[in-house]
Length: 69
Image (cartoon, rainbow, N blue to C red; front, side):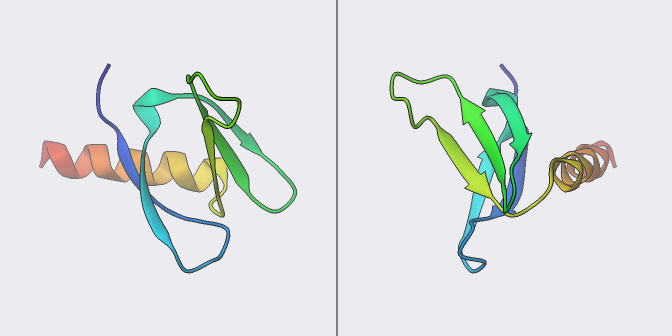
């Protein structure tokens, strides 16, 4: 599995976290946030962020382009 780290903001609007989208199994837009799901033993193997899925994929694309230059 590769590494595809993206900078995200938690729902409090202040806390920054970095998420490895290569490990995600789902990205779902909800009413107030986006839920990124991961494989895990716990039912709560997810993180909620304020960015939309489109914003996350745009950031990922930008990061990949920056790596190539």
